[in-house]
Length: 390
Image 1 (cartoon, rainbow, N blue to C red):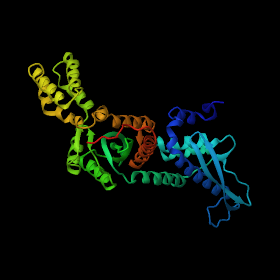
Image 2: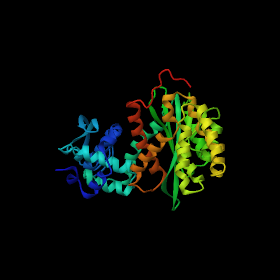
Image 3: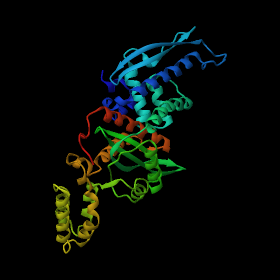
Image 4: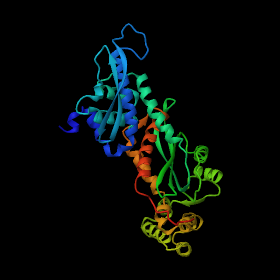
């Protein structure tokens, strides 16, 4: 029997959106959520909450029994609730390790795909045979929120390179649909590993949001920065200058190359202009790049005056990377790490389409960010930092 045959059409549809190998970082959270689900099931079996006096009570809680469950997500150390005077065994631990597929999918659907409370209730009932109330859904949400809060507020340290970017999600707010700015900061630490430093959701990408976001990173101990890599968004630029005035800035050359072709006077000249931009930043030294820049500015004064003027006024902002170790150049001259992270956010949020509130979006983005962060810091180094000095 295939996994899709095992599940209902609703679950099969969700499985198409998920990949278990992407969810390894969720193992501790899955463990906590499964323990909480078993407590809810015991309450329903007993028809009473712990210490509750009720005429409907069928029996009494009788402690816990340890159980280790090995799944593809990793080892889960569970505490199976016991009862007295009434037979009970959690349905989510029935034979066939149903919980491996059911709980992982439930959590993924509930939190990593940002579904509404009503759909959470429907999925949980179908997966675990459990009629769950909105209060109990909130109880499960609280567990995940506590995990995410630790991640958001963890102490930072020495970070050499910082990538900043933003993307947008749709959220329902005050009866209308609005664009929610999701700000992200990625860092490369002194060991050469990438980290997700922080994520922030707000209805504006204005300077005040960026400023608060950067100040929060500093308050958590961010230090030792060599370079900030980002595009030239006005709000970000002002906040960066106000909060981190002494840190050098690298303007993303990928975005600059995209901007350059918009200054072309004709479609036929676009390819040539694009190649001229690449020729500048592929030079083997800053001096050579500046020499190529001057040549390009003069070359297009007559043929493409708007491009020539733009190039002269802006392109040196993209040459800061030359001051850093040569083997880092390709990884610090563009904002590609942040762009790829945004693509992953988009892949994981597309099922939600429209978030019911800001908190729902924050929970989803936070869960995905924490998962990716754990994979980065425990995996292969992003760049070598030995004997490198700014």
